[in-house]
Image 1 (cartoon, rainbow, N blue to C red):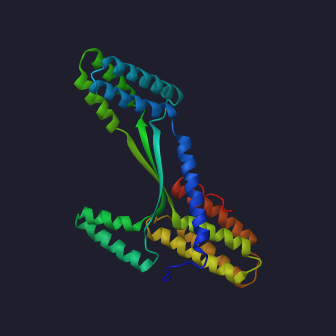
Image 2: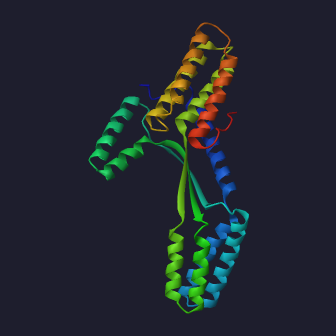
Image 3: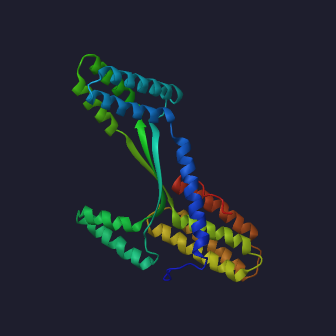
Length: 278
């Protein structure tokens, strides 16, 4: 839309963004493996002990780390990555004007084609509107072996090699990210409010539905699963309900089905269902 503001008060949407951010934080913290966190801490303790020429303390730290890792391997024999640290942040710097977004997309494509990657990265940063969960993971397949090998090297007096191995092990921690598109969350919130007003205030319901379509389009233009055919299906479903509202038809059932479909779509795009608005 050309307007930079929605018909719905910004505070309403912000409340749901804050709720979803807290939900993401709670989910991320529940995934943390305390044993893996301890193993990382003991790895750093071992490195510090080596630098202080305290081989005995270093070996003891590695034994504690190995014990924690053995617990994880026994508990999750098929798990490759174990979360040890998380960070949840809101990144919402994209313009609301779809024409501006299209210009940025064109500039981004040109930068990639010219292999001007620094410029491309800067442009890409302007196409983000998401709640991002960043997770640091311990590679369970290789990390325990590194701890054992470092302990073996220490027992043979090869402290420099052991320290290098431990430093390399820490560098193998893997970053993963999960993004919850804010425009999709906004669209869901607007649809929920449309349900609440569908029978009592058709004009406001139509405004909510129009803004929901705009947010849906914004998410697609920002590249959040842009080619997914469900965008067109959801757009059509909203337009059908708009026609029903104008015709004074009952829309409770179609809106409820749309909310279910939208929630499932959000879950497939972001890996989680949206928090239920209050």
